[in-house]
Amino acid sequence: MPSDQALANQPTGRVRRLRQRMGMHIYVLPNLITTLNMFFGFFALIYAIRGEYVWSAYAIVGAAVFDLLDGRVARMTHSTSKFGAEYDSLCDLVSFGVAPGVLLYLWALQPFGRIGWLVSFLFTACGALRLARFNVQASIVEKAYFQGLPIPMAAGIVASSVLAWNDLGWDPQQSILLLSMAILLAFVMVSTFRYRSFKDLDLRERLPFWYLVLGVGAFIVIAIRPEVMLFVLFMTYALLGAIFGILGWGRKPRRRAAMEAALHAEGDDLHEVEEDSNSPSDDTEKKI
Image (cartoon, rainbow, N blue to C red):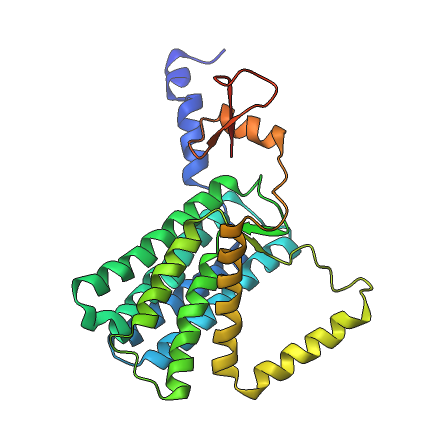
């Protein structure tokens, strides 16, 4: 029978749980790829400060490539985790929130003075809000649609605008067009406008022949002047989502009652109050 001293030396359940948390294990490969995403975001920051804006724009594009890869690798290797999801969001804020915001300010908006840096901050803040909202709604949003413009796409539009202006030889300083673009991107990121994600499009399946023709046509259009045409395509995607959202076009998102009830039970604060047509007007239902 163990002595009282031996029993006293045994760790309690709370201490054991704490040790388990401190000794947590993580999946190295996908998180290493996510770190490369942040590396290129930091690279973009440094080169924006140095005034090498084209290199900064290319670095943001590189960060987007690794952001695309880490999720794919995690799913392929069955190494998805809560830690990886949170770490990915933190890295995305650096690469697609802070870096494009600083690049926008130094490259084009600095002559506007206080208005310029406030608009740059607005872009970064709305990007952070977009990431936070995505994290709490990831389990209930539709697979085929994003709610609001994804922050990597917004950052890609900023990067492609730098490349397009440089290719066209335009002066970006104190450009009203770029100031308006930054405000628009901030707005559509935190909006509830639905943007097609194309995640439901499986290219491994048989599709109509015109899909291939459309793909070849898009490739030719981009190849004519890649820097300019990529900016035009990305900006068109952002504008069409905003226009369709304002006009209320497109089918409405599906509701997933079970997920909504689970999030409501956890005390989630991102919800809208919606009136139920089958109950009195003061009976409300919370919907994510």
